[in-house]
Image (tube, rainbow, N blue to C red):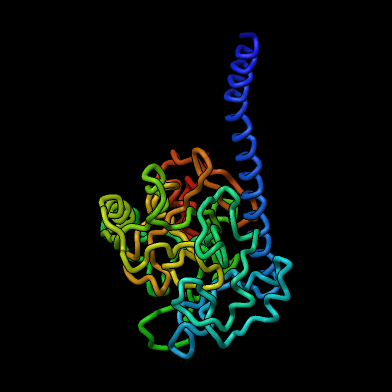
Length: 330
């Protein structure tokens, strides 16, 4: 009888301690996630110090195909202590994609799972984790105006920090000019540069599908209407299931190399409101952390942004040149 009592007490203690242990582990993972974003934003700074602009996403190559269509992360490699991977990159070949959309010219250099590109709180893996990533750069909002009929942010008009470029004149993909510190007119401490995201999967449990699925194509007359249109979508694009987060070296928007500030933190993501080859998509910032997401600001700081942030404030910190007076994270 006494033994049973002791066993029961031990069971109760274990039950009480387990949540505390899990919370401590998640706190450590969240800290590492913050450190990763810090390294990425500082690498972005060092790249800009060297090249006078931030690394671009090459949306379409000079050969009118996937060859050389690299994300900003390839440009950041030398500034993240990955000079060897940079030196061995085949710049005239396609970026590696474990999903098979591209060839394998860079399989040796870009099929690696680099810890700095992956938040340890993310439980999903695609292709055994090869080439996976969970951080994206900010390319702004869907429209330059939040209400009313407003100008669409597409065809070289993105208003975030990320830049999609194409070397082909007159191509159907119209690229952005490169951005640098001089283009961040709203101030670097009030402009988001990078955030984390949950990899897109259609096989996760129902309670986490809200921020892990990428829903169908959405649009609207302004940023607010575009967000609401995305929230009404009930289906996903069957041709692009389990793409977001699987290939850190590729710039294609379906892979999720950039994110958008139209959707609030941990809201659903939707596919392109116009043209995802040029980087226009409603990929939201999202995480497995309770209550919000980590965001790396353009000044190199990292802030935890709550899900409850005012939508106008979230839109404001997503634009580099909107002139909004209220871009303060609570």
